[in-house]
Amino acid sequence: MIQLRYRYNAVFKSISENSAPSHEHLPVLTKTGDFERMPWRGFIDLEDALKIEGAKPVKLDVYQYSTSVAATPKWQNVTEGMAVQGCLTSLGVYAVVDNGRLRMVPRPCAG
Image (cartoon, rainbow, N blue to C red):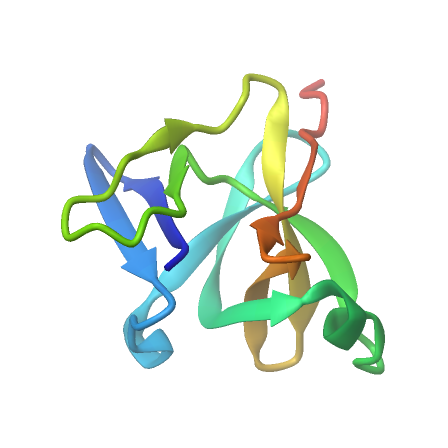
């Protein structure tokens, strides 16, 4: 099961494939390096994301992720300078999965 961990103020929050997306908001990075919070819609396969009309690729400000199926997640840090690929739609944002793995992309440069 894929899980994401992100910062919300001074607290780390976790969401998973089983999280109810209706009340979660994930930080989406802007080109300036800042972020905006968008409604969380879940995970989506890359091929399905490419088929959504009007969707645009974004970068999610995620701190850690886990793909372990154990009761206690084995968290892995997102590599410095990288972000999780997101897919922004009119309903909210998805995290993109490619062949069962989170898709990672370079973070925007601040400035």
